[in-house]
Amino acid sequence: MVFGGPDGELAASLRYLSQRYSVPYRDVAGLLTDIGTEELAHMEMISAIVFQLTKDLTIDEIKAQGFDSYFVDHTTGIYPASAAGVPFTASYFQSKGDIITDLHEDMAAEQKARTTYDNIIMLIDDPDILDPIKFLREREIVHFQRFGEALERTKDRLNCRNFYAFNPEFPTAK
Image (cartoon, rainbow, N blue to C red; front, top):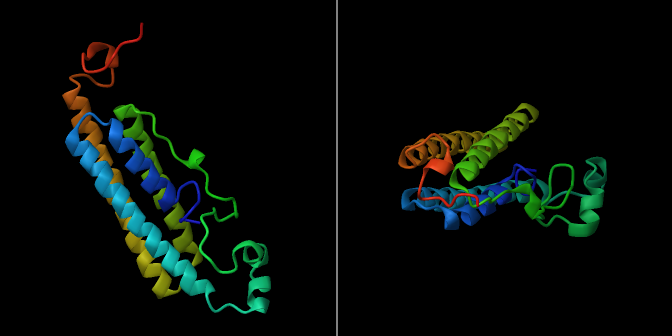
């Protein structure tokens, strides 16, 4: 699910809000804060959609849809898990403390989220679900672009192209 799976909104929000502390540049830290906060809003949108789709299910509908094992543990409550039912884990996201590594991670995460939304779009035809999913997909593309711009600005500031050994701002291995 796009809420609690490895490419979901919960992992994205935690990733960016955790990474922002070790970023040496205020504008990039601000970008991580802004996008991390927006991902929390995306999480709320996904939760609302899931709740609306499940709140009035009958026991027969729950069984017919294979929702019964989830129902046993959570009834129709919103619980962070993947589409396969695997509970959320912090191992879904990375925060290395290295701005270049983290921005590459962030760009990859946004592409994986976009792909997940693409897959959802192929499976549904209800416009009440499709429209917000398309909106969220568009935001993943914008986030990817913003992280790419931040990566280029960061590389320019480092006066190198990802070679830390030549930059006095970063400690060298001893």
